[in-house]
Image (cartoon, rainbow, N blue to C red; front, side, top):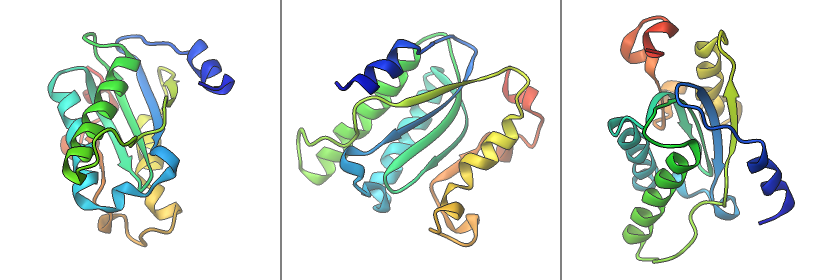
Length: 163
């Protein structure tokens, strides 16, 4: 593990109830998630973490070679444990599908940022899900299949998703 990764971990906080924005990247920045099956495998892992009540996902955008995910951390798992489990599940499943056991899918580690209370979470969610537009992958976000934001489901205020 390089010094930069160690420095990231040194300041990491894992507090239940906090909102985190994380980014994690594929091994060697491979564009694995251009493949629909591989992409849906990762999305399934995010939804499973929600079902386990480890997190409350607020927004995500899965790009061809990386993931942006905003969530409220639950009480059942630490931040590193959630990310490790989602990455491990998706890597194992993708390798089974591709018949490439043991191949690295994700780079080690992840970048995280705890979101301050009172922050505009909808603004952050809009920024996260607009990644395909900024990257020039699509001209209309509705044509990009690998994103979601809880406000589409609830139609409510940020307070509605934070309880």
